Image 1 (tube, rainbow, N blue to C red):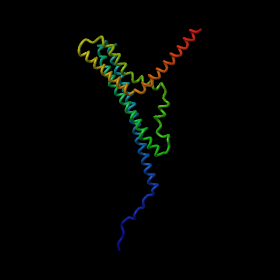
Image 2 (image 1 turned 120 degrees about the vertical axis):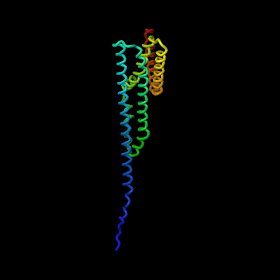
Image 3 (image 1 turned 120 degrees about the horizontal axis):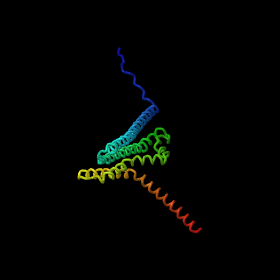
Length: 221
């Protein structure tokens, strides 16, 4: 008498259960990727703010040596190099955050819309862009101008003190670093700067027309 040790064949799961399991796995992977991208963006933002604080601390220490301890003012020649390297690092991290936002908006959001059927998912970037006001833009603009302005001030202060070829080379090197920083800033903020210039021009034209109308009315009276 022989026994059949083979297990009976299992029936294949229904197609609905298979599709639901695949949808669940897809959703879990989507949420995991979105969470990972958001964590990297938060880390880069925190690192950028920490870099700004470290830069201001170093500049304050150098100024303290020059002003309080009567150190050589040509120590300020180190500030433009620090300013350019820190500013370019900030711009690079901001570019990475913008690339991550575009990836979420253009790649992950269509997949999330397909999985959920709800058009309201992954709308944080659009919502934040609509809600942030001029104060946020001014804060970001001022934060990015800290580096070139501080470097240019140090170059202006040290210019009359240059006495050797090495000092002139250091000064020109700092200037070239700042030019690279400003050019990178202009390239990255081209659209925003264009909107600012156009808005300022429109405001100036409105003010000029009002002043011209008042002057004409005053001349007639």
